[in-house]
Length: 250
Image (cartoon, rainbow, N blue to C red; front, top):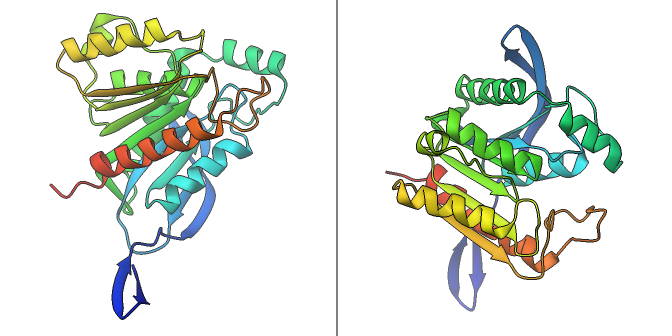
């Protein structure tokens, strides 16, 4: 917090935490060792944590910047590397990398990332969420179906699960940010997921952005699909959602 003197009044203004450090960390996923970028806020922990999942491009600079942005909001952010070091800016290569990623291995790596954050003394064990974009949005929701201790899940235009038994396993509240013009997943697919979650008594908040398609939050979107207003609004929703569920005092 900082104090400002304005017209004789003293105002207390919250200040976002600075970054204490970032580093590449390694942890076990089954019999394998995997890595990710860990960004920790400045100050005294423990902090709530967030698993950050990249798009089909891999763990690129934009996703790393999102992890840093979350750390500035007060979260220990772990950006996972599901491709084990491979990154691309070419669509055909990205498609090959995503298609060649075994879903069971990806799910195992994400649960390992969750466990890694839980094992850190500077992370609150019961305040860990997940966020992902595109392919990462899909895996954000998948982690929610497989990790009952997850405290919050955010998906940007990620394909939702359709299996009723998987949906029934979701315990975490879900936030979805989707483009109204997206074709994969389509708004109808997302609405079906939303209705299924609500029918099962789960907590979900979905917003569709008119005039926005897939990957609208990424300014590097090669389809020129970046929508600044939608991206800013979706980020505000994300920050507020995590604050509600990961920074709660009760």
